[in-house]
Structures are given as C-alpha cells and as structure tokens.
Length: 160
Image (cartoon, rainbow, N blue to C red; front, side, top):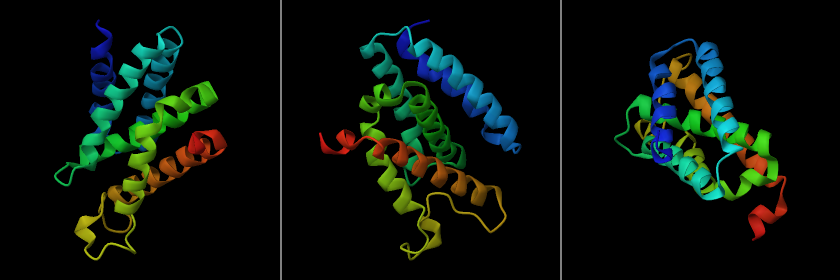
C-alpha cells in the first residue's frame, strides 16, 4: 500500500460509520483505527507522517464547505478526535502537524455559534433539540475545545 493512499483507507474505515447512530460503538471503532494509525506513526518519517496527516485533514476539511453533507461534516468530529489522540500519544511532537487545525478551529467555532448567526441554516451542524445533529454539534465543539486546550498548554505553539 502506498503511503499517500493511507488517509483514504483510514477514512473509509471511519466514514462507513457516519450512518451509525450508536456513537459509543462508532467511537470505539474510531479509537481502534486511531490506535493503528498512531502505531504506524511511530515508524514513519516526519515527511511521510506529515503527508498522512495532511491527507486526513484534506479529507475532513470537506465538511467545512457550505454544500457539505452531514456525513462530510461528521468527518470534522473524527479529525479532531484523532488530533486529540495524536496529542495524547505524542504530546509536543504532535504540535507541528496542527497548524491547519488551529485555523479550522476558529471557522468551526464560529459556524457552530447560534448566537452570532442570524440564520440557523448557516450553522455548520444544524439540528433540532434532542436530535443526532445536536449531539454531533456538541461532540464537535467539545473535541475542538479540547484540541485548543492541548495546544494552549504549550506557549511556544502560539508564539512561534
């Protein structure tokens, strides 16, 4: 398997769960996929790992497009869950891979903020109270805030 194809294969393993309403089961499968990817990260060169991470970010970034489907938007949850797992495993060694994610974080938090958007249809993930979409929005916001918190532990990340 070529390394540049790896994000696509991991993405397929995760995207097939986007229709799964059992989030706990989906989360367990995602964690297994992340564990495999993180084990592989230990043996990859920095450039190869950067290519894999960038492919994963490219795949998930499709969820920020206004025309994105719910499944594409769910990719953002997967990406930030992975980023937090990556940080937990590699701590400061993971930080150089997070530049694009910080930019995306601001976009996501703005697009999920119902208090600043005049039209609810503009929300990144829009759903009625008690819906799957509401749960997805909550999970995404929590993952993004956890990600920012992980980065904020390292002053040099924001000052260099």
